[in-house]
Amino acid sequence: MWGGRFSKPMDDRFAYLNASFRFDWRLYAVDIRASRAYARALARANLISTTELDALLDGLTRVEQEFASGAFVAQPSDEDIHTAVERRLGELVGAVAGKLHTGRSRNDQVATDTRLFVLETISHLQSPISNLQRALIEKSEQHLDVLMPGYTHLQRAQPILFAHWLMAYFWMLARDRERLADCARRASVLPLGAGALAGNALGIDREFLARELGFARVSENSVDAVSDRDFIAEFLFDAALLGVHLSRLGEDIVLYSSAEFGFVTLDDAYATGSSLMPQKKNPDAMELARGKTGRLLGDLTTLLTVLKGLPLSYNKDLQEDKEPLFDAVDTLDALLPVMAGAIRTMRVHADKMRAALDAAMLATDLADYLVRRGVPFREAHRLVGEAVKRAEACGVMLADLPLDEYQRIAPQFAADIKDVFDFARALASREIIGGTGPNAVRAQIAQAKQMLE
Ligand code: ARG
Image (cartoon, rainbow, N blue to C red; front, side, top):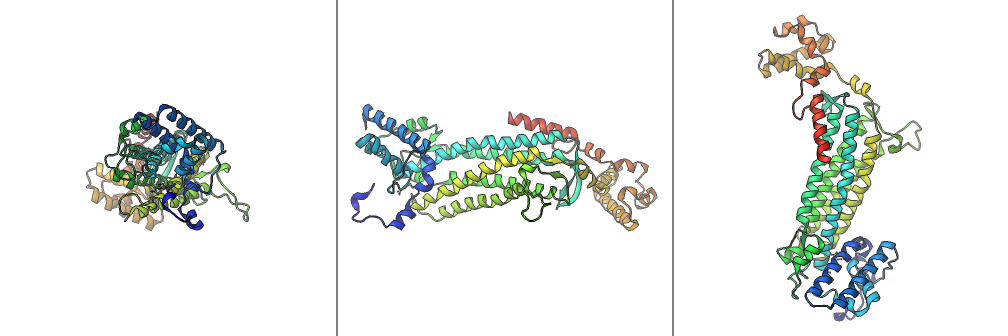
């Protein structure tokens, strides 16, 4: 490919280090798509004849078919996907293949391919994410009457609807999808025509190339176009954050499916057993949501580390952008459908959640009771704290502390405090937008469904 200047072949082990075909063959479809557009642009600029264009287009289609069917045979000289396609094209259509690279560099070529790949990936990720969102909605709707303890600091805090907890993950995923769509806006910029770094000298029509390839616009600076990989870094951040959300969902379910909580049971199809302990049922799928997220964070860190300190413009370091990118895509592809399946099939134990509610979780509602009787909140908070302490000293639940004890703490307490100790009522008092009141949660789910349409 650049043999003219060299008098010795490459060292074998260096050739292995230098080559990327073993992983970047995955770009074959976008590479060939970009080459087709480039061939057309060459013809428009009268750099090749229409007969030559037809030969190139026909040859590119045949190379693509070989990749798609698995018939493509790589040669040791195939350093990367770009050289592999060009080598095979030459074998199929002859010398005209040598015209395809006119004015093009692998630098603008690889940047173009990777942008196309990221754009395709983002659009194909929308459906597995929304499928998981749909699973969250379905499960929430099936258990709209289930109450559970809501936690802060992993301590029982206030009663909430099970659906409210579950739907929290819907909104995280909604933002993940938004972030990916936003990443696509910035990825949709055509680098082709930037050449090696200084721009194409042969009058290629870049606006035409952008239209052919579906890019929203063309890059403004050829040095930037071949140098930066910020669109991959953004994608990897979005993937890492999506992973963090899946990891937290996984961790909640690991906890909730333990005997200590007993709130949910994973379906056998999404759990594993132990090779030693016959009684075990392990939430491996959820643990892998947590564990695989470590890789996603690593993928992001890898790329940022590669970019940091690189002089402009293209450097071979940039070849290291692909493995983290592919790894993140593969990790999400493996994880998302399993999470959706596990959520859809998990059993929900309303009784266990109910039993985990204790009246002390209504202490805030008791303070609100005093507030409604004119007591300033800080004071109400202190008075209820005293009641909690008193109940503990008497060895009774907060709800069972006698009224005269309450009245000794604050005269505003009256016989109707027993109404406060009603979980359903506590929820019903939170019919505010975004709150855990049953109607508010129903409205939230309706809004979520609308978003998915
Ligand atoms: N395989 C290379 C990469 O992924 C393609 C670009 C090579 N460019 C170069 N000037 N050696 O970055």
